[in-house]
Length: 456
Ligand code: 2HG
Ligand code: ZN
Image 1 (cartoon, protein in one colour):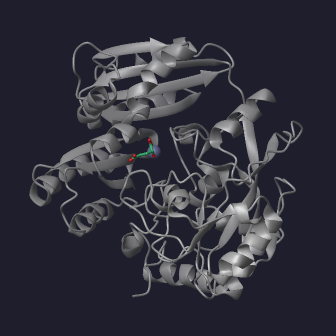
Image 2 (image 1 turned 120 degrees about the vertical axis):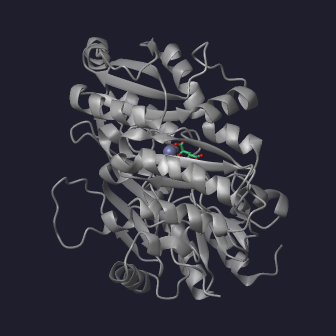
């Protein structure tokens, strides 16, 4: 038994089996799967419900202990692993999903429900959840709310923020804010759930979410388009947006990423000849959307080759290269990851400048660039640059800012970008955010170092 008095108190709250201190048991909570972010926790605590989360947060307040909330630990910016010495609060056991309210088209899900489980649950009730992403088997509702996760369907349904009708969350002092009634119109004062979405565990611990569901669209077609590069792909976005109603996804992958997926994971390239980039378009509707998509692409000279699939296995095959990107990168090394949004009109210029910056700052590095093109969201992964210091972060993020982009599109700021928030928010904005943080977490114990740089 640990000599730490907080561990003993936590064991009373959640039961001794759910307070972990043995390094063999805590290890998987203490590092992220890219291998970049890691730190020892004081202990890992696994409450089962909101009442236990309250007990844990209260005990941590009494012991002045910092807390790092964690969902599925699929984050990529160091937002949910400890720096060292914090209590790691895993929400994984809050995995209860309530019956779908088909009248309202909503469901209430615990923070620990995985995206895949939520999707299955909604489907059983004849509905869908509007967010999808490759880490669906591990990413959880709480983590997706905390990061305002985007994913591949933002073009159709918006980010997680657009799905959240209400939240239940435990504040730093252990009190519970509960807005789970699911009223689409409810303007009594500040939108606290809206504030907590994307707050990355720095203002409260999300325990449950009331989520909007969307209609199931039975006819779905995916088309993989071979294109000569980013400028051509962007031109196609404009064409598709204006002519295709049921756009679900518009995803971009470059040659280097296609080859990486082939080399690392044995994924097959859909085309027999190599192309500079692929644009993956998915369209869904109540009737067959194929003719509409074909019409929209008629005369699109940018497209060199097309592969189409309208059945499940065929679509999965077309998606494989895109969905394999993160895993293939992780297998190839510890990448420097930048998750950025650019105005679509600046995207191609940014991409060109990025190559120049990398050639200068990181000679020999490999850039794997892919992303959600309809939102101008690129995932810039730089391999073989791990030996470089953080100057590369400043230069790449500075380049993004100089093109009027955002340095944090959908993964969050985390610890990675806490020192660069000034590139996206001016002084008044940062002061307002700091005031909110002080008001809700006056002792700075919730996810220290995330969003706001850690005090030295
Ligand atoms: C995706 O779009 C994820 O697949 C991960 O946001 C992106 O690994 C990345 O850079
Ligand atoms: Zn993404």
